[in-house]
Length: 124
Image (cartoon, rainbow, N blue to C red; front, top):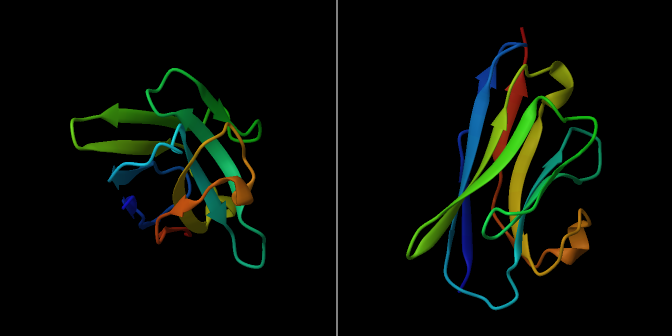
């Protein structure tokens, strides 16, 4: 059974940095990519960053390039997917989710495995 667990969310001031972590345990042959998504208040869940399971292929939403970085650390019994977020802005306030799936996609429906989310709040 595949399980994903996010951590690292916090309340921070504008300009701060945070690193979110997502521990992925269990195995499924349908997992080739990991993604970070977020849902801001009143908005739909959106894909913001993708990475192949071995880290060789990455994508960050064009509006976040230069501030957000995705990476993965592979271990024997688990993978840990990171989202480094720098120069945080008010509009980055959202619930952040990690997900795992078979294809390189930012569509929510393409990811069968999800974590519970971690809250990031940017306020002064």
